[in-house]
Image (cartoon, rainbow, N blue to C red):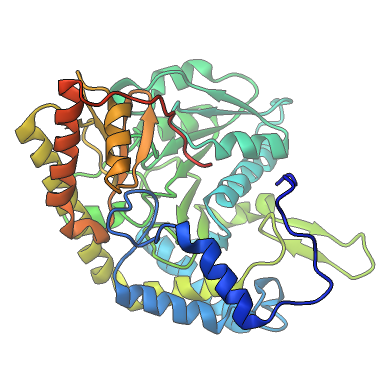
Length: 421
């Protein structure tokens, strides 16, 4: 961040610990609690017991660096291998699949894009200016990754039925295409893309196919186990080469943990970076970064072991019940609705006649922390087990604000949809 004149100079003498933490208390006084029940943004609470397990496991390994796993911290290598094995089982991977833990969804996407690029050099040698074809709703991290590894992105302009458009994606395939992407689900709408169709395109054209399951990777498998309608999205779909899934979202680990999983472990050769050009010997990693905090890895293992499949199913069932109650409450009123039929926990609230920016601002004033959507104009709620007890209060405030907007008592001040800031 740029220096704005308000930052302190680096003092000659250190600060007493008591005074230091008092200053931190003052600085953070205006921060929101991440686990506030009114927080409908991206904060993933699975129960105070799960949070306690996560914190304790993280603290045990917070000083350990996974880059030295082989020589100093073999426990981290075991944790990572077992987390990957459990996730591959959960996502129906075939024999010979592989994967690893990254620092987050963006790094998982970055490494998937790099893997596809280098795979393409072998399998698509005619693609001299390699391209990725994205649905309209794909995460911007794909553009970021493409800039880093020297690829071009072709992003679709529409989402018929609020899902990716396979016909438009097929029309965009050319001699430079290397990679197709789908989301399970995308952040804006929570509706899983037609992954079977897109994977079929990848197979028929000889392309790499990646599924971005960063939000849904630890949610959709348990929806399926609960008997909810979930379209095929994982390694059961022939043609899916890689999947990203965030441990620190609905996997409920500590922050800084995601997965990149490969159908064929032999393709790790395209993901790995190795060099022995410097005096200290061979440097080889499957990640973009070098150091990785052991706490994030250990907390991932601990939470998955603590919850088991049954624990995840229980929490997913809570999310389903909350989503259903919100949708039913809105349907009874009739002025607001949930967009489409989202399988994910991220749902979009829209209206045919009310100004959704004004409604969002009204909810802000009542202490609700919500996301915004600009196409179409709407609210984004990300539902977690934390929200099981807030449905009545949320609906009451939402409908009261809708009354104010409908009557003209409230108009929008003009705030814009922003994902980060």
